[in-house]
Amino acid sequence: MNNYEQLEKIIGYSFNSKSLLLEAITHSSYAYEKKLKKNYERLEFLGDAVLQLIITEYMIIKYKDLNEGVLSQYRSFFVSEDFISEIAKKINLYNFIRLGKGEIVTGGNRKPSLLADTFESLLAAVYLDGGYNEARRIVLELMSDLIDEYIQGKKVIDPKTELQKITQKEFGYLPEYRIVKEEGPEHDKVFTVEVKLHNCTFLGTGKNKKKAEMDAAKKALDHIQSIVKAD
Image (cartoon, rainbow, N blue to C red):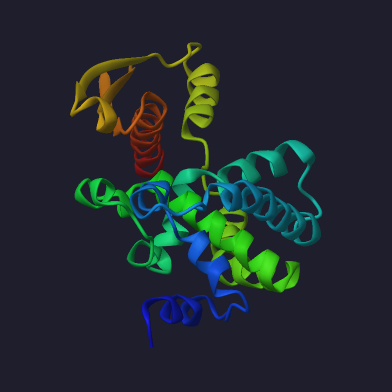
């Protein structure tokens, strides 16, 4: 069994067009080095739309009581880079991406953005090769349990908004975030952000300012919830 047959086995789908599968897992850096005409970028563009449709359809059918605003918020989270990259890791997609030497050296196959894009391109390839139902089956097999877990468990998917609601209601002010540190080379920075609640300071880290703020807000929320439980 070759490498790509292993990927087919993992997702439970055998491609009629193997060239389409190869295109879906070919990064632009690999295509440039090997002088190939195609990489996954066009497929990723289609896969994003297919994924949004599948998730929207699933939530509309299963969660009839959710209004449009809530559905939109959940969909944004379920198609986010962070969420999709975790799904990609679930199927070990990083083992199958064809990368150029430079990307390999910098650990490109583990980058959340690259993993998410490759998953979407793979989904588009399945859609083009086998149709919507096959693409839908794969997405729901990988994601439906997690989607249900978040929605039914009412898990916080936007900690910044949730923290803002609490501080505004309970304390009468909005949380303020401040970048306290930037580390690493320009192409791979790590940001550290702080948010203050009364006398407490919470630090969050991330690959960009937004992710660092989200991390800080989550830690602040965890602290608030621990106090509530203790009371």
